[in-house]
Every structure is written in structure tokens, then in C-alpha cells.
Image (cartoon, rainbow, N blue to C red; front, side):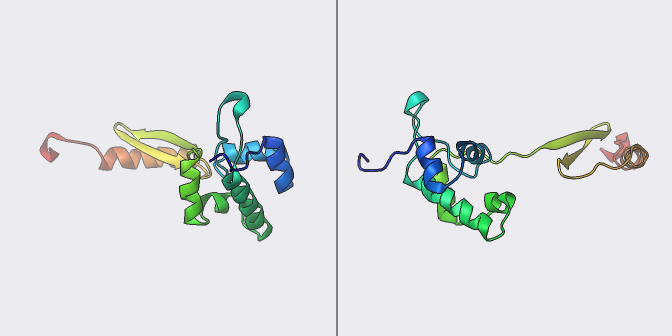
Length: 135
């Protein structure tokens, strides 16, 4: 709509009392929808400001960014989807412990020692082996 406010990144940052870098980080992390438009026409709207203020209020109440990313008001998620929010990212490590058997470990989980991994691999080879009679 033509009557909708349009904010530059600096305007949005000033209105929310954060830095431009914070705005960019929140967009990158999926806490704030991506700006509208392309190139020099990129801009933010009222839903961006509302969400940014919501994130700040949740932080002030003691919530972590991870909590905020994972929860919050469901209506904000619908709004973020319409504005082209960045999908949630996560880091996983993949370990092949036996032929045809992989272990996927999230980035925040400590991988056991090499000797414990060898024990796991041996257990997997023993219990996941396929023989002609099993087929």
C-alpha cells in the first residue's frame, strides 16, 4: 500500500535503538524478515519495526535469541513468511560408523572420543550387518 511507511536500514535501526549491524544480523539469523525490494530500493516496513521491537522486548525479559527464534507469537511467523524470512539454519556433522550406517550429530553436541566411536562402529557392524538369511 502506498500509505505504508518505508524505512531505510538506518531509520529502522534508529527507531528501535539498535545498530544497522544488529538489523542485518537479525535478518541473517531469521529473527527479522528480509527487507523488501531489491538493490538501492531495499526497505523495511511497519511489520519489520514491530518484530524488531518484539525481539528487543523479549530479550529484555530474559529470553535468548535462540528462544526467540524458536518461539514467540505465531502471527509473527505468518507475517515473517509473507515478507520472505530466512529459513532457520543448523549445523550437523555426519559420521559413517559402519557401511550403510551414519550418525548425524548436531553442532552443539560433543562427539565422543575416538575410542568410544570405535566401540560404536563395532557395535553397528555387528548389529547392522546384512546377511543373505536376513533378507
